[in-house]
Image 1 (cartoon, chains in turn green, yellow):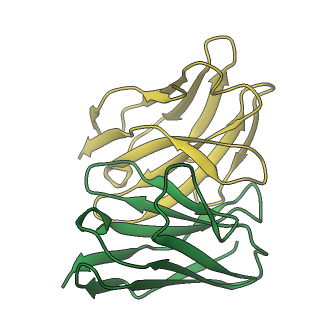
Image 2: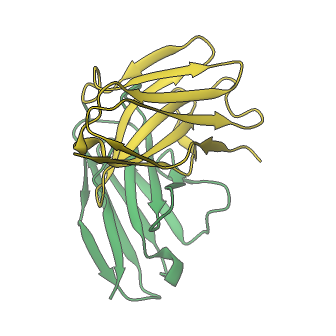
Length: 108
Length: 118
């Protein structure tokens, strides 16, 4: 099973600043990496897939990078609605897709 | 709009059985795998297993194999997740999700909250 490890567990950032979230895979997942955002009381929603492609309707301030085992989600200028929990997921090793444990992005 | 509609919240006792459902609207099932994801209170997302409603091919995560059963009815575009004997540790929100093999999850259901009392 591929283990996905996210860091940090909690990230405190002020509105308008940049946030950088990390995700590491225990073995290569190529570029088959997705990022999801989950707000309290809601289902997650797809932000980024193929490591760097924004999903439909996702603002340009969200960007993803990386390949192999190291990945990054960057939010360039945090808006109030961006404070949430973010999960990475590998979809390279089907059928056992695995999630990271999540990073909580909170207001500083 | 393509969406997955899940059955309502459940409150059960330990030892009871349960079957929750996920119904696809429009073209949301054809050619897709439907999966189930668990989120325990205050915790992260866990991949449980998937089913291809077209032929009921089912795959389980090792952590959930033998504990739950995933099934589907192609004609009614409905997938199911069931337990024969619930435990308190099954208390969680269960999301159904859709994906194509080799692609990420693109649609999530709203979740079904399951609460088990001992």
